[in-house]
Image 1: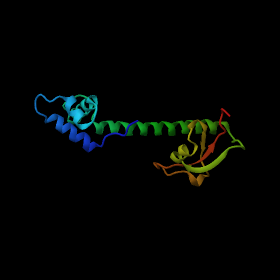
Image 2: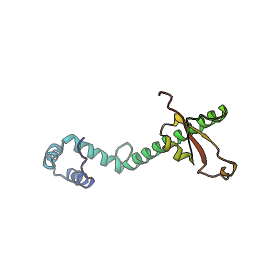
Image 3: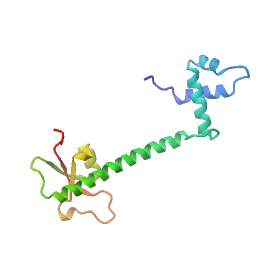
Image 4: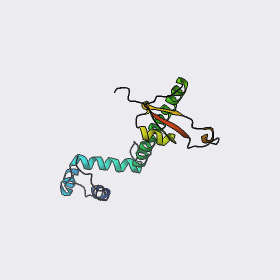
Length: 148
């Protein structure tokens, strides 16, 4: 995939295209700057959207949506880990082949990678978090890969 054009270059080309004299086509401007005419059309449309004169999400809204989707994905993984912890705790004793560590829930998801292979249990009574605590320390058990 080709490297994207710098934003300063895009802004300059859009400014030139908007301020061009009558009779000068988008194709001519695009050729002068060495970009494809459709690329320039997309840049012009994106500039209108960012200004609010055309419908659609602006760049800042798109970036915010992307961040929120990542956050939702992380929270869904953490929720899956906690669901598996409840299932694990209801089974009783653990497996002798499991690897056990103490860490926060968020680090537990990163440690194991696949939330389907995680089981959580509280550590000793002194490890229990204070009410309203965000980082909960738990014992993380990496279960054997079920496909192996």
